[in-house]
Image (cartoon, rainbow, N blue to C red; front, side, top):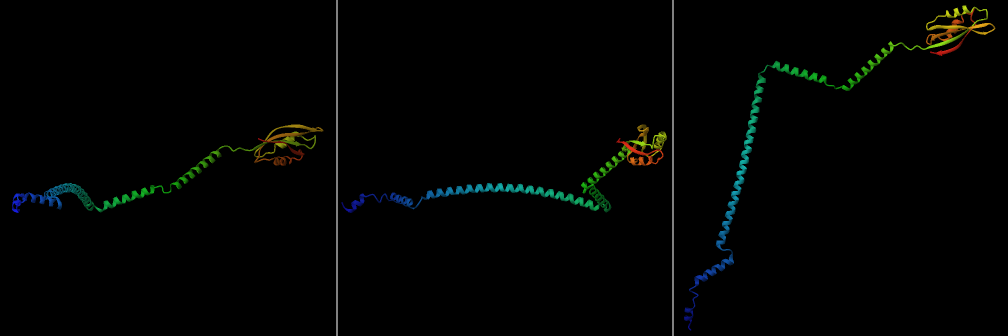
Length: 243
């Protein structure tokens, strides 16, 4: 078979478009994704970007609303401050228009009230309480002393029994007793008496008395009785008892 006949029978040149397509696909596979895949990826990217953009817009809108609410609150505060300032200005105007004397009077009255309050403050309360307690104590002591002074004082007294001896049996015992009872002193009170035999017909006078200890003592009695030396030989204390 000749060369022309072989070429005539071979159909490679007639199917060239099919081979070109196969070659194009081969190189596309070797060099990366096809143009269609690239377009698909680009489309997905655009969708993601659009979604992110939409989310950002929503966040921005939310922030704007929050800022508007804060702005409204600040406006309300500013209005309240303006109203308060206006009231304060009106009050200052009224005070400026008022006469000066009443204001001074009010200040003076207030100052006096403050001074009175200061005077009422018990800065030294403990000292005043101590002084008051001391004063009450002194008053009670004085009242007790006055009450006690009104009561009769307890007078110390003693009961004394005296033995008065005569010189002899011829002594007039009646006259002797009369002499003894003639002794008078403040705080002395004579009591009962009797004659007691001592021997040889001689009798002694035994006489009792009550004396106030602060005024009359046994020494005074002996001294005064022995002055009657014509009748009295001696005086002895037979008994002495506190009453």
